Image (cartoon, rainbow, N blue to C red):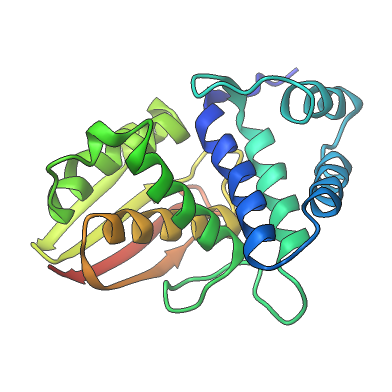
Length: 225
């Protein structure tokens, strides 16, 4: 049996659950109905009876703590399921730019702002946008994606208001264009929280789902302060 990788995903998953509740409230949707649809869709995507049972007992029937260690596949199938259920007709499932919204983008944006005020407040306090990109974001990325991915993360400063973030999704089982959209949203929401203006993030290269040896993704970030 292949070992399934896990990370400290508890608060990130909690943020997705809170996003769903907030999204339903803002869009006047029946939260209980939507939550039930997302639960069913997540379980449908599980891929095995063991995973179905894990979802039922840990995600939908258990206690999630900010420090909960959860398998990466859980984050992947839950994000895909909630995006599929919430997106509605004629709206994109993923995006390559902060100029075009989608559910994963908004979920990442929501979580960034929430975590900046709560569990990861210390990583945002007294930070300029450029300081946060160089120091805060790598620490957060490592928590969500693990040490292997964290070691390979590159944050390149072209000038104080222009950065490039390169992620290496090789051997990362939750890598997908949908997940990349949450990264765009998280970066965008964090920079908003740090009072940056005219933020533009483009996902110039996405190899997350490509059959290549190195699954590199590049995010181009510009902003004003």
